[in-house]
Image (tube, rainbow, N blue to C red; front, side):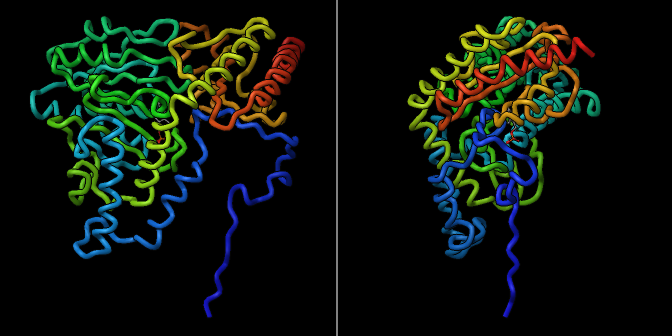
Length: 409
Ligand SMILES: *Cc1c(COP(=O)(O)O)cnc(C)c1O
């Protein structure tokens, strides 16, 4: 008999023995990730071990798996109002951004000698570091567009930056750090008029904003499931029919030859299920988010001196509140909030532990002193008014304490 050893990981380790927690664990970091919705998990489960075939196989095991992938693709295409063949499944939002930017840049260089990339200083690193690598290692010229004090990109600035040799333009749809929503349709119209491929990183926008390709004027659009209550480790890239992309990963002809690798069937099913649920419930949850967010913003600005809202006051994600407090170390504030049982972020999740002020806030014109004291609070489907009120109860005292510790040292 084979003895099976069961491992317990993550949350099944009794956390209290490591981190003493107060009775309330309040999660207000939904821009970093969201839990998998039970209905999504349920839809995924049969595809791990029952319908386990390789979608590329000829036999019926393969056909069943392929059917699941293709019906997921149709479901996603319906929500994006595009053709199923225009949806490429990838391994995450970052990979979708990489494929879009690198793929479009190299294809445009090959086709017409294009050598110039336009993007913004407020992109997620998945775009920004890809653009930087293309500039530093592959000889592309890089233009980083200016942004205003809210982190908005203006279509006029995009137009001014376009050159005859521009290969690709990439502008984030909704900023993960400050929640600001860009006028993607207008920027896309500018790119279209100049026949330059236009990519938008919609990974953060996907949970709350309209994803209708018919109105967005984009050629490429990145999504990631774990930002909208789907699993981590699966993304999609919308690729407009006729777009030229050099594949980022070579091998088999999966995903129209743009992304080699046997499809992760259960995760693709989870992606589609999560996006469908999100589309169905979007209006409902957005109004839930807005009322919590506005309660929070009002409460914070009222109770904490030398604090400001960062990002656009109205053109921002419904679930997103972000602040800067003068004379506070954002990371210290996060640790103290965590000890008080409340999980927030100081910017993008990847930057936690990094004492540098956020580049996004600096690009928006905040001084380093202000930018170091950033706090991001993002509410979710199950966030309650009581949880917001608990944060409002705790936060002013913590900010005060950190300020007085600093001035006395
Ligand atoms: C989370 C995020 C990404 C990265 O997505 P992953 O699926 O985690 O790789 C890219 N862009 C934005 C705006 C994001 O919020």
